[in-house]
Image 1 (cartoon, protein in one colour):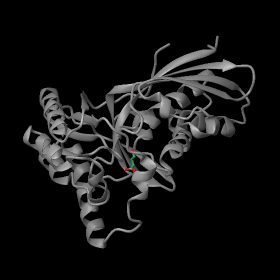
Image 2: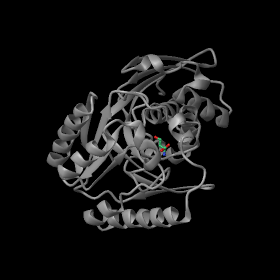
Image 3: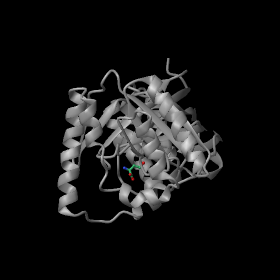
Length: 311
Ligand code: HSE
């Protein structure tokens, strides 16, 4: 018998990963959002929220990433089914680790389950992206794809969509450090130039290719050499007080590479053991403190699973 309600947890993610603006992202095991969805008789979506800094998130379905993703899904299916949706934020919004994507991913997985799985997981992506576009104003998938599929994802093409799983080296760990302020993704995208110099495009293409080869061969030196961002970091670094010193503190603590996570203000670092990832987290939090900012660190493996159905 089909259930009338479901609870789904989707995790945070790190997008761009320095050399892969809008085309590389990976999922981390924590923090995550939990979305509870219940079928209701009247059509329409009713959203309520709780958890970390939820007050800043709109509950009107068209303006809410989870709501918009569900509406897009129902529209495709031609379904008039109504839902009550409760989003429990474990990921602070506007922190740079895919907060809106996690809510959207959990929402589309949950609704698809309640409707007896009319779509494959891969077919949920465009609906998650429609939700994500509410928050970022852009149609990008480098948070929502890892949130939906887990692992390290390459978006090789947007038109048509071509999503590829990259190998996850066994000994690759992530640190994400979230300073206590918000950067609106829409604003952080608007500050980027529409064009990049050919020289930067060539260099970024080389680094992206190097990064993917580094993952295939578990060559962490190559990964580190490739983690250079010529597209977004030069413009966005100024949004983050203390950015050069916090980044340097991660490198000094043994990071393979470090950069801005998504549109920031979180920073991420990659390393080759959980112990080092934790040490990097403590060091970066200390460096942010010197820059006058409170922050919180999450040191985790790469998360390789789709959103989890809790009950
Ligand atoms: N690739 C996106 C950006 C990620 O940098 O704008 C947003 O989290």
